[in-house]
Image 1 (cartoon, helix red, strand yellow):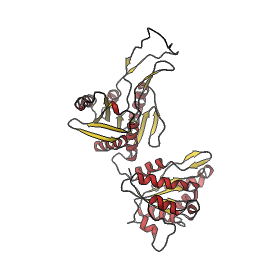
Image 2 (spheres, helix red, strand yellow):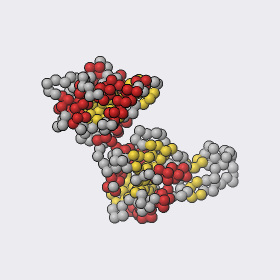
Image 3 (spheres, one colour):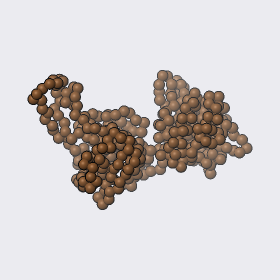
Image 4 (cartoon, helix red, strand yellow):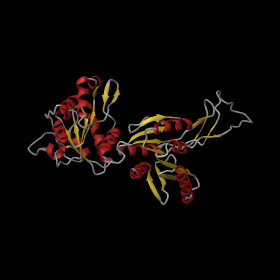
Length: 384
């Protein structure tokens, strides 16, 4: 997601500087080239050699006659983006006041003047983060278009965001896309219907594909609502649901302000009347009456005739022609933009094989689910 992006990594004197070796590796793993710039305080926490090893580039530790700040972050500089991670309260305040008394703040002043994107991941003790002057400095710098990656508030500290969150935020900030500012709703995972307080009828789904789609949309600037029975994620507003009815209600609410819906979830086709008490384990004549659940995409289409909707279809017969035929039935019935169809055998795996089906075409995708998420996001971009 950062292929070909040149990242100037500014490191200041927070103890979180020890995380920057892993961060540099993470950025490079996603395709970025990285060059580090360090303050004197940062060098007291981590040796420049560590970052030289992690980035495979010399580290700037002082501004010399080579005007390193200009060659990195000037009008024709090397960097596509300046990432300050970690950024101390001291450094944020200096940037807000255009004070350049360290290599990092000098690069920041230069980047802001040259129109280079700047992303800041602060790290400090929580009382410092809550200081009115620090909050005012953050607000001021944000008004200049600088993006802040919110810290994790834990144990009285505003800890630096995870390396994955920083990489995602950085990619989002430097990836131009027609999806920027679009609100996209994604359903993911499976739903379950309660039989009694203990037992459920559920669909098998790991949610890997849905989360990969949501992640790829976020990188492309979309505001993502992820409806699933899963954890909070840094790349979407999560609405947690369990049943098919709860998922439908959540999607209908979110669709009121949505530009698109991508329905990835394996939603229960049937529900049952829930017993208030646990059913006895041994009953010779036990039977359950299954009641069909409403089709989510049909319900949303009826309520929102002009909404862009992408469907997913899973079957188990392993036949591409049959899969394409069933995908096109849904495509036509619900007026979908395209359908991603796959065999159920890929559920729970990191790898997948899928068909991206339109009215007159069907393209095969074979690879990791993360890459399929990117492909789906790219296909949605074409719709806008």
